[in-house]
Image (cartoon, rainbow, N blue to C red):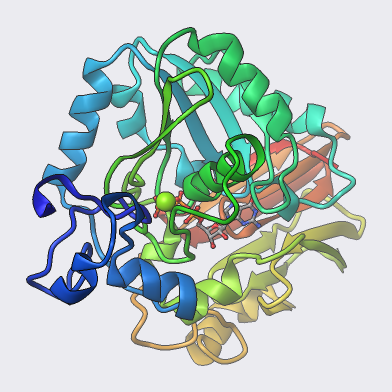
Length: 373
Ligand SMILES: Nc1nc2c(ncn2[C@@H]2O[C@H](COP(=O)(O)OP(=O)(O)OP(=O)(O)O)[C@@H](O)[C@H]2O)c(=O)[nH]1
Ligand SMILES: [Mg+2]
């Protein structure tokens, strides 16, 4: 029976040998279950006790997945985290989906303020994709948490797939499994969540397929590892403080030249002297659990050395080894409103002209865009 049995939560092969590994079900339990309802011990614990089981998908396992998708003429639904575009847009996916039909989904739109204009976000997504040399058939913004826009997603899937199978792909933690659960509940009659979702990376470990109404199969897939997700460098505690769990709320700061804002101990924004003579209004959109601290630029480096992990937190512990910081300088002279985005952490909105320096660990994508609010 174990030969071709897989966990319906994470897609791991079922085994009864090692209870520290995914896919484990004791022999006793196994004898009482049918093949379709097997949920491994790891998934059971994640679902019922929110326990975490860090587990890296080995490259070999991932290559197996790539092979299957590459060999098939399939429709790809590529998910990016709208709050962390740089962290969730992985070049590996480009190889994976080369010459394939792709629908792009910007998920977690509920994390952005409600007054954000969808059209502006979609325009920005299109520019980002064009910069990466990437073309898609259609794009849609979703909230897998609240179920926003799923009718539109399904319309696009049925419009483009023909008789082909559909693969939901994207880097780890972008919400692929949550999207599958929404589709199963809303359109395929599931009474509860089937696949396992969690805040920890690498929850899904194999392909998990479900029949759509016309017989095509829609697959949840394991997340691609992306070193640009800063979560890989933080403890779970710090990550939970940093990555917003709900809509980010604006905070307004009035800054003069030679002043600095720290976003926890994870990023920093300096107003450079000499460009502007007026006060600059800065609106910040970060997790409300992240301490934002204002100081004079001349004191910033010392403050960082002395107060990292306390006043400037997260990170919360010296055990967390953050990658080295780099700075990005922006000097804009028109009078339009811009966002400075610290991908996955948050963004600030300010009106040009300005001359600023934005600091963050090198893995964090930092860029400007036309303000989305
Ligand atoms: N706020 C918000 N959180 C979401 C949304 N979709 C997913 N999440 C959360 O993001 C985390 C990751 O979700 P998963 O569905 O497990 O992500 P995944 O892409 O399947 O991750 P892997 O299986 O590791 O590749 C969970 O904590 C989800 O609750 C969304 O639309 N909004
Ligand atoms: Mg998953």
